[in-house]
Amino acid sequence: MTTNPWLIMAINMTVVFAVLIALGILMQIVYWIDPTKKKLKKTSVATPTPSSESSVATPTVTTNDEEVIAAIVGAVVAMGYSSHQIASIRPIISKTWRMDGRLSGRN
Image (cartoon, rainbow, N blue to C red; front, side):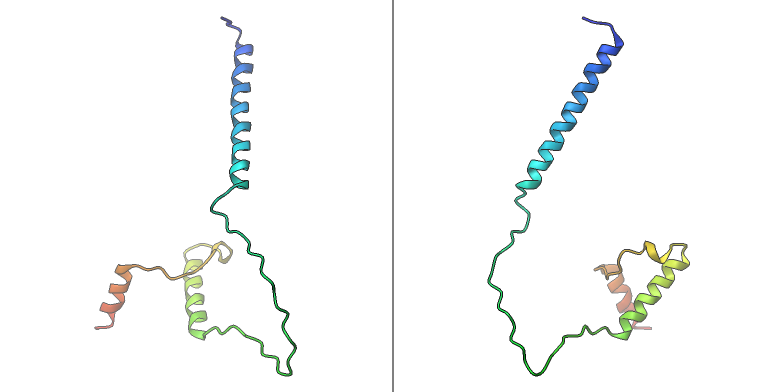
């Protein structure tokens, strides 16, 4: 048995880094054979034929949604956050807010 602290430190660090390297390799193997990854299906893509009328689908955004988003961003900025910190704004499904909306319609 050794009492040299440098030898004990070297052995412990070797074991720790060997385990970390083994875990890294295991993570790469799991990443390569990930069963939950969506598989790409190779299908034949038909080339569109040019037509005399060009119909371009334009996204429609209602002004009500833009106003709601502007109000939400304004409220968040008023609380001290910057507009760059907002990642997304999406509705949540909550029974309490739904009930509050139903009850506020009675007033």
